[in-house]
Length: 395
Image (cartoon, rainbow, N blue to C red):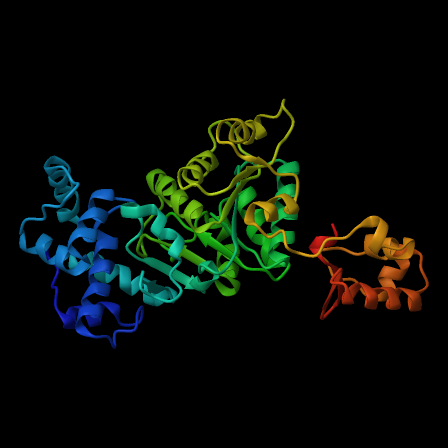
């Protein structure tokens, strides 16, 4: 391997992508993790076990020097195969190219000890990423943030796109971070809907964060980076491949408290994400469709074979998240007929003025304003800069 493992080399590599004003041990660990992210493919469990055993910096020193890397729990033949995979990729030029591209893109290197690192990734064990490369705010998937993965078919139907939009918008409006993979179809709708309501959304890419994929979603991915976050474990400059898409799916499942499959055929890649969520023991849901629809066959399989919950709306997802402590309404006790009409004239996604609510409800504007004030006190409506919205708990 042709990599110089010195503090000077580490500072040069980390400049612009990471704070390099660190104690030497932390500096070398950060640099070593950067190098490991270049040397290995995503989810390499042998590399993960080696780094877990020796530490990132010491394992890299041994790899460069050709010293033994015997590790508990790793068969000698598996370790030998790992070494044959890693050594040809240990090139300072590749590391330099990745960091130069990251600097041009404005990407940052995020490490497991950072405050914003999502602790959920630890559930992946030795298959967890060494680093994350980020455009935007990685703290949107921090542990205290409720997160939902909304994924599904690229060739989505109008029905699937409608359901995905409703779910993403309502959940994002309630403060839930929407995680997806930026693909065409369901993924793209989920990101757009979250952005449309001013919510939080995070895109996980299969290649580098400097290479928006698909290219037709470059503007959407840029918008996600500005208002949310775009993340990848592969270094900048890495092209997406079929294997990297499958490996990326484990991150989507791990970063989400709950995964929802909106629409999927029997061979959809979304089922791979569902399998990862099930393996991690995370709540899993799927939206049903017509039994004659090939586009929903995968969802029905999730419900049948993966013990997935049947999802008919955002309330079902909130229940999977454990967000059931929001105030609820009793039709008989807390609603008058006029209040019912006012609430029915409002939307959970789009703010409306009192005059527009009056027009839709058929109630005199001054009376509408009084009812809105009462509804605000009970938490049934929310005021926004451009008007009023109905709280999700009133659905």
